[in-house]
Image (cartoon, rainbow, N blue to C red; front, side, top):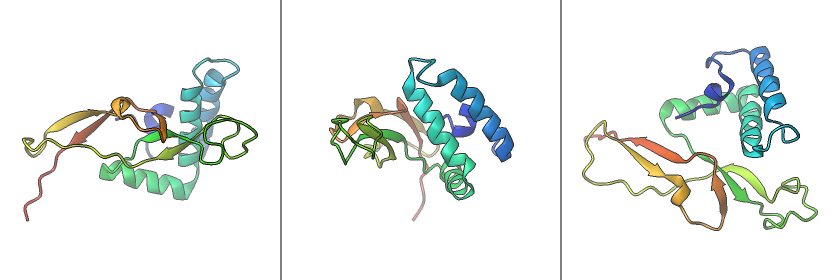
Length: 145
């Protein structure tokens, strides 16, 4: 699983100055005026806003260390319904980024420590424009009760 730190090529304990440098380097390369892949620029922007803020960074670090990562998805803008018309909520994009819960059917024949992949791109739901990650990898941990 690629984390925001991997995206910036930083260690988890990087200071704010290193984060800003890495963000500016990537922003220059991936800005929509320079690059055609604006989805990656949006991902970099969300990552930067998350790890530059101390409170959000702590919550993010807890999520990735617990394995409770919720994949970011482009969700159709609730204000304009994706029409992109005069909408300040989504800045005329028609979507907003949001961490969403995903219902994953877990096979019953998996044993402790098994890893299986769930293709997020196959989820058909009108609320989600698309997920920014292709596949969700899950590691099974069996707890005795």
